[in-house]
Length: 358
Image (cartoon, rainbow, N blue to C red; front, side):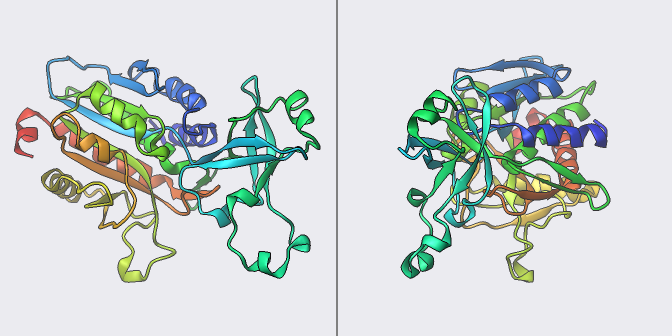
């Protein structure tokens, strides 16, 4: 996959609307860009599986994981004045929510624009101005003036998914992508890039890409994909929070432009030490830039996968993204390239004997 096609893939995935449980547009993009890479199938949760061309069915299985959903919102109720009360889907910081454009799904599945709104400062008391914002005091405004207008004219219903309205851009001079849902659409792109780079190559393992749903709601989809794929080894791709603008220099472990990040630990998984060391040593041998981190919070789909199938060696290859879990993320395309390079290099060298030594 050349760079132009790769950027187009990242753009299409980022622009796709995919609130947890409503990832349909993302799956459509993946099917279009991955049509020549193997066989697709879905389960009832809308997890999408891509079995690599060349799989034989009698060899160890390596699962490549990334999730298709994004942090989003859901309409909780329609107020008499025509605004929409909403709840969050995934881990938002409340102060990042107001004053942004969003897309609201209508009854026929199409989307209409709206704005996340809060009380204007002109109407706030001093106490309200000093208080931390709470979601219950916010609303989504689609321009309606009554509940009846929302239902009958705008055709918006309770439980409608809502996603940020952000259009992907790429600055080629500085190799910078700006867009929404980089957690984890850049991981989804990395799976397709990895499989594309392995086209026609003779491997000693079978490979299944698993694009899981509802990660932002508690890694729900991956609990199903792990039981379905039944992997002997797994590589989890994730759009992970970059710390290069918020941490002290000596603590920066996830910077953009410096390669993917491989975490040793997070809140729900100690990364398999031997598989982790294998990946880090291979990256050094091949000159692939990588970063290491020790995290005290956060988690990935590695958590349910590594506890499945009587225990699965898992590593997480993270693409650094500034300001994830907000409306906008910033990432370097080269980090996506190097994430896929490392995964492909691991798969080219992987076999049953190596897996048994982990």
